[in-house]
Image (tube, rainbow, N blue to C red):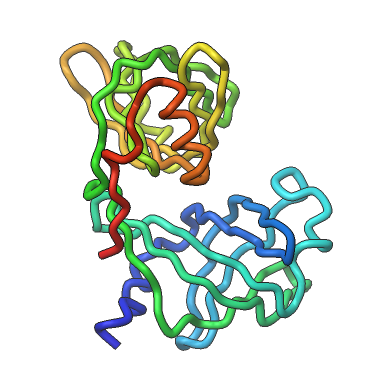
Length: 220
């Protein structure tokens, strides 16, 4: 099925973090969990989120619930795969797993193809171990940002970890994931995939006199 991009599901690394959006009739809830694997093009298997990540998970994740799965593809610089499907079953033994029906079609989005607007916004990067880095957002889009920090520390280990980006002076925080870490003469640049909604990002940009109309979101 080359036109559906479903073959790209094989490029989601086992054990990598995925973004799971749980859809309800009135709203949606997003949580991070891990990719366990694929089963004979019948099921996508994910870890059941921990209680810390999703308190009361049993109330949200049940058979038949519709979810949207988003993940970073291995080997494709900044490319995100996304699909919408129903949960087939929740396994309880020997560990809790989510079995999602295999999608017939997926969407691909390239973070690098998004128009990124140059900025010099002061920011803080809060890491999953509660460490905080002070730096500057060098560019931003509706789905990502480039965080620049002056440091000589080795931060390669933060790649693929969860983070919170606090942008500007109003302490507005956006959940995200560190997708890349690259050295430069004065420090490091971290590519961040932001998990905020388009509406949240547009509102933030308007507050900081950044025109969201300059940004186009085009699926591949």
